[in-house]
Amino acid sequence: MQVKLDESQTKEQGTLAKLQECIQIVEQSQFEKNEAIVERDQIKIELVETQKRLKKLIDEMNDKINIEKQKVEQIFEEKLKENSEKIRQVEEKCSQYELTVDRLAREKTSLAADLDEWKNRIQRQEIDLSQASDSVKLQVQKAMRERDQANSNTMQIRTDFEKLLLQSNQVRDIRRYEWNQSFLGPL
Image (cartoon, rainbow, N blue to C red; front, side, top):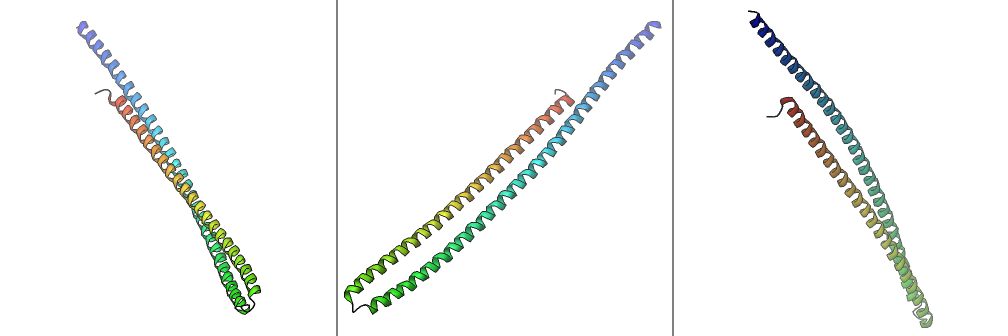
């Protein structure tokens, strides 16, 4: 009878030890689960902050692009008006030159000298007009290059963000897998 009682106590102690071991395992698993949840929440917060910063950066770049575009458009409009006025002035002067040539038709020597002078002036004005037009074209091309660079930077930021998001998802998946492995144990 005493032997059976001793065996029963030994079994109870063994069962109690196993139960305590199981409780420790469950508590450890719960602790690791809580740590994983906290870490996941921190990653979510960091991701949201990163998304906010990225959105702000993209918005700022879009604002800069729009401002630059408006500046280029304004410059182009101003140059176009200037060139139109120059053309009008040249046309007026051409008309004046033609009247002068008609008036001086009877004076051959004087007419030839005056005509050459007017032709030289017209040529200089056309060169000035051509240079102004070339300058406007260069400014427009520069603005378009800057716009293209800004678009390229925006695409790079988006690509970097997608990489960061993918890495974040991979880290989350790895942690979830590790947590599952530690909680469930090897299969």
